[in-house]
Image 1 (cartoon, rainbow, N blue to C red):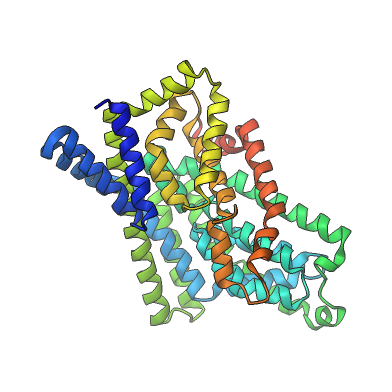
Image 2: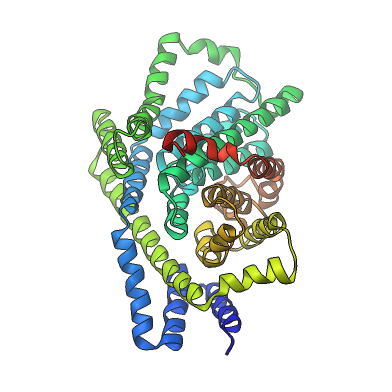
Length: 442
């Protein structure tokens, strides 16, 4: 049987298993090991699976994953994030659309604390959304704000998705995080500019706090909330400044962040046994899930490398079809958006990474830059009907007055903003690559 046909059979079998509801790591790992056994015998199959496990166990930067996830859950479960939203509520409520703009700021900081989209969505839907609706904000706009803002969790460092990409693409995690920082902040700024313009043109979309309510907030109360709300910013600075200056390694910085978050919760007398147990359980579950997925992806990629599937696809696109490298890159991004209608970001990456990542390198593109493109495309896919990941998370958390049709319509302007951000990063790669170059002297 030709190797090209074997590669197609592997890919189609894996997709079929995913459609039947199998877990991502089980579907990918099963197909990889069975294909290896059929191709190279029992020894080959065992060696590939065992080699993938050893690579994961020896990948030292993976220790950052549980540290950052634990930090995020401690700050979330101890309600320190609630203080953060109250700060934005008080300081931005006097502007048209100010609370919506403050919600974007909240999402950026939640992203910097957790690295997952789900955390931002949960906090936004349970804390910010009811408050915004109570203040008579337009339900379509605020629903879109929370979905778009929460998607920043997979781009703004410390992004867990970029950790997974780093392992599969064999790229430095630190460079990928720094590469995602400016595009993430740029996208957040575009969201805020859009909200400001919309609410300036139509103040009814985002009413300001009443004069009576603003007068009730004393200057002392504002300063108290500012100190409480900026605590997570201080934790992030304590963690990242030593790393950026080269005083600590990435793993050491992640440990500093986790310890700082824990001590902050203790100092505020919010570190109860229930908070600690929930944070540890959630951290353990997410860490184990990602380790299994990475192991399965490495095994699958090893089989694809052995088959020469990447070289065959490169030859098909560039020689036989004569496509320009940029056309191939755009087609790859479109395929991510299509897959995002029924898969999450992790599944998308481990399914196509064995093909796309080597192909991107063969076409002459920077793999760190492509990691940012992939992540932004995942953000778009998260919010693309009919089965975008964030759409259904919002439907599960939103109050009854927000219908599924409202959720679909709310994301339209924000998807266009994300597409604009994606285009800017594609046209001007230095938006992503400038900060890693400055820090690492590349």
